[in-house]
Amino acid sequence: MSPLHRLTPSPLKRSARPRRLGLTGALCTALAAGAVLAPGTVGAATGQRDGGPGPGEPGAVDGPEAVASVMRDVARRAGRPADRPGVNILLVGLDRRSGMTKAEKDRLHVNGEECNCTDTMMLLHLSEDRKRVSIVSIPRDSYVPFAAHREQGGKTTVRHRGKINSAYEHGGPALAVRTVEQATGVRVDHYAETDFKGFVGTVDRAGGNRVCTGKPLRDTGSGLDLAAGTHVLDGARSLRYVRARHVSPPGDLGRVRRQQRFVAHLLETLTSERVAGSPATLYGAAAALRATVRTDDTLTVGRLAGFGRELRGLRPERMEFATLPLSEFDHRVPEWGSTLKWDAPRAEVLFRNLREDRPVTGDPRTEPAPGKHPVSLPPGEVTVRVQGHGEGVRRVEQGLRDNGFDVAPRGGDGAEGTAAAPPLRTEITYAPRTEPHALALATALPGATTRAVKGHPATPLVRLSAVDGARGTRVVDVVEDRSSVEGAPVTGDAFACD
Image (cartoon, rainbow, N blue to C red; front, side, top):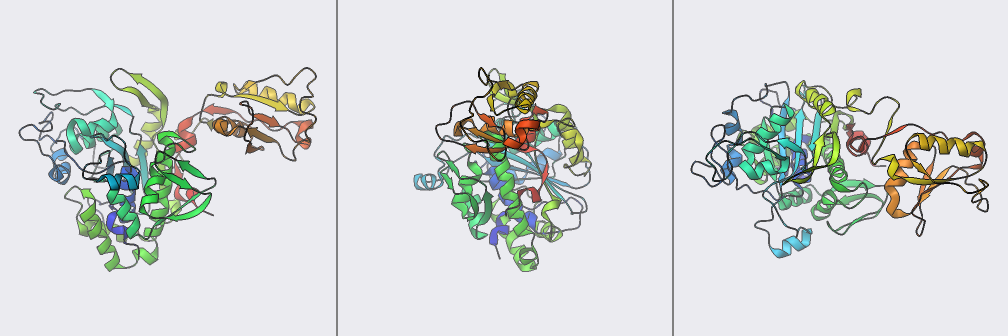
């Protein structure tokens, strides 16, 4: 039995009957995969009233007590979102390396600079009937209004905007919770945080976790070096996987999606009858989790074990994963630099579904317009050359131009590349470094295959097959929508390994 449960926080419901186990395990990994880029200690403060004392001020609560009392502190505040069906847990990972030796940092590839902020945030929602778990990731650079607070050493209440990961630095876990509540309208019932070592221990005690990839993944920053295929990773390798930011898709959204994929596989294991069907195992997992992951003091071992029982047998199609939809990926703000702006209409739909205990998947209001296929970058940034014969070539070129792609000339007589035999199926060849461009083209040409070629010119080449040359490969409408490419709401079965 995987002891991983011990390290995973499980959702607690305010007034619900306990249900299945997977949550216990998922929480920790979500925490770790969520907190993954973060060590978990707390040194900031929570105030007792709106604009209460800041870190280090008289009356401030520092250290573990700030986590234990966080929901009691938040409950004292006026104007919180209404209490709705289901239970919501805010999972955070702190970007700290305090207490780790150099050898530990070297082994885990976490030698970078730390900040007293949250590196990852996930809202975990358990439906009232405990038949569904929804996890929504909130990107760390989201630009939002902070809840009212006092800055360290300040005497007056301040209200300002900033990156959501810095709310913790400005006012500890209570301000992080209140800022999330204010920004989302979702009432947070419980809070949990973890760190690098906790994540590694969780996965190791679970006997590892399964991940799969269709292509090799290598990232020198996190130390990840993973061949294509399905693997069972130990804690240290799992940490590298969930921290990687320089593999496709790159950046925080790609990293968050890999974290979600990791949590999905972990949840599937933890909610299985083999793991969740043993009361003794479940209680032991909850006790280990409570001792390893820092939670508010209402997340007792008994409640965790109860929620574990309630989630037993949860199927992947009843697990939901989404990343908050974004409208701008480089919103420049003085003093904050590059930030992320939420796609307000779609974000509101997503959070309304959480508040009303409805699925976050399958809602057309969070998807691109009907008939539009999302791509991760502006088509105008993609130059492409089309090769082939006949009227079909001109149709493909015009279809790509209509989508905004920059179509390069084929040459004087339109017979460019006739020396090469046409492929059996329309193919997009490209230089490895231009993979995002090739993927955007593949979205617009759903019948085409893609192939990376070392030494290929910077401009991707679309080679029409002999069959498609006459009638033309089908071209569909695309729209720039990186959120839908890298973080659209999906159910856990979308992450299934072969």
